[in-house]
Image (tube, rainbow over all chains, first blue to last red):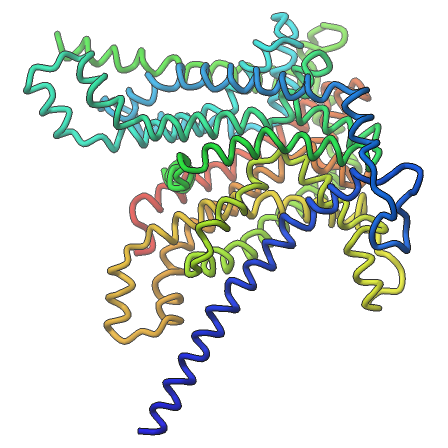
Length: 286
Length: 285
């Protein structure tokens, strides 16, 4: 009896220990993953140029907002954020308008070759981003679409389309046929069926698709770099110039931190709407 | 008659989405292939069929770039899944997941270049990692981890960026296992390790493979990260292609490199598609 109790208390002790250790481990990994890199960037951005932060010091000896002031005064990072937002909005609208009818056709109509169409959706993913950018860039240059919002947005629509189509197709497929049939039995016109049955049921998928498209456009580099730059600087291309040919750690820190803001705001605002299942369902399965 | 009309409508609806994709992908792939045979020249505009590009494409810099790109992308994909799998399993059991999950998604949402800078800061010559290792007397001299020929910085950045992406896929796969299947196993006397080994892992291993393939494709075709944190030589393939086209004005060779990269990507996309099909048919159950 005593033995049993001892074993029981031992077990509950291990359980308690585990209950403490697992979150602690995850917390540590998380700290190393996000907090430490970002903290370093914050520190670097605050270094006072008169008191350089160099090797033996673990922390900068003097902090100032000099670099923040400098970067905002002499570079157009707010313009880059504006460009990114404009392109992302154009991409999201264009992509959903183009994807909706196609996703409906593949998800609801029993088309011959439906499976093949689902695979064809992935075509843009089968071409390396840089190869697509370089050779699509030549086409766009010929058509006078380079260095314009329209050109960059058109290119972004191309590379965000697969995910949007996949998510919307899954949404359309999961509308139960009974409800559609019930609506037609009750005399609903095609338009009423669309408005009252399909729209409410695909809205969550559409929102998720729009969020992934928006984010995808915000962080797309290759196409923006070849087709948009130098006239249309977006967040990733201006970052690239700060990390490449004019690398200054302090200024790059400021730019990096500022550039994270729009995406993190989008993440925070939309977190409730993004069911991770959508990405899992759209990419993990066929 | 009515049936036929409906049939045609359905195909017309494919045009905005698939037509758009098809047109631009076929156009850019077409230009790329034509270019690799010397046709439709970007600089002079002349069209002359030549095999020059294909004869000279396997130069030393190409072979080095291929080796570098394959090594970094394979390692990134494998390390990422090695980190993600246990973390996803742990996180799924933990109560803290409600607020940890959105935070761990941050790297997926920020531009890859942000990650590039953040990680480079950590592993630079006098970065935090080197300082800590020196402080602990593990190394006597800072390690060169950035712009190094082994591409350690590139791998670190890809892992940082791709673990959250894999996490989203793996987490939804683990969550997707029905609780009654696990309860059933527990009723039959399996302990939690046995449940993990006989149920959770077999049911999620194909998702893991899918996410490894997708990560491999992303890193294999990466330009931005390896050109900022990677070595000058060897370059990544995408970087080599872009430099060949824009700096050396050698569009023929650039076309050849593009075609070869596309072939590798297509092979892995086919693998991904086949696996995805298997997943959908309830493979592994």
